[in-house]
Length: 253
Picture 1 (cartoon, helix red, strand yellow):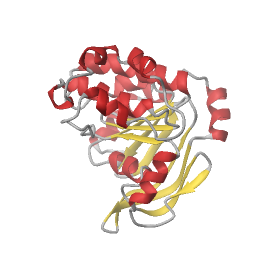
Picture 2 (cartoon, helix red, strand yellow):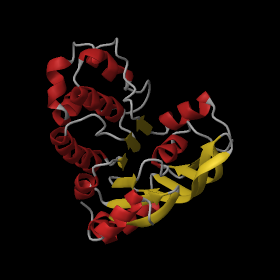
Picture 3 (cartoon, rainbow, N blue to C red):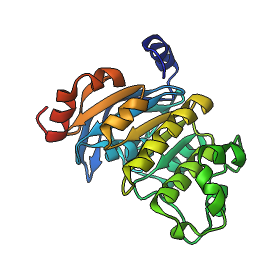
Picture 4 (cartoon, helix red, strand yellow):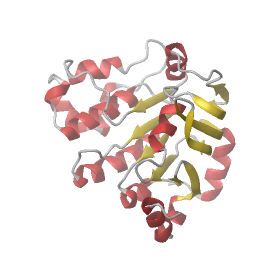
């Protein structure tokens, strides 16, 4: 994990800069004036109770929900100039290196694990060799020929992560990785994400309900309450303030 000086230097060359972001549905904001910065090789936890705006924030960064106000920059270039969702804009973000693993994992269940992985390779540009990806997720090696719909929940989550990583993203957004998984699987996967960030330089944003576990591997954390950022600091600082985490999840911030 990085020290505070390294983090401050990295943020001057951020993979993602979000400033004053408001976003929502049908013109009604559920996220208000959010600022986020994600640097190369950094793991950042985005925490908060259900309905705090975490998923909406990720969807907006990915171009799947229109922003209502604010700016979003990926690799120093502004995105989301239009206030409506266009497939072409989402595709352009993917080409800039934004990968998103949604809650439902987004797998093609009728395709094999190997076929799902091949779909993660960019048509042009860098990708990570399959052998290296499998070194992070060795359990997939035995199921490459099996249809994704027949895999266990843990195997499906590993496949979704591996498919996102194989394209060597600058920015990896992961929404509720632990959903439906046993805690022991989550404990195994979180350090893998730490390794991926350190080895590839990808900036990783994790929306996660297992607060204690994610703060052990994260560099920094943001805590959302009712769509607003109520904490922005290092993971260590938030670990030392359990009352703030508790109030954020109980809606008392």
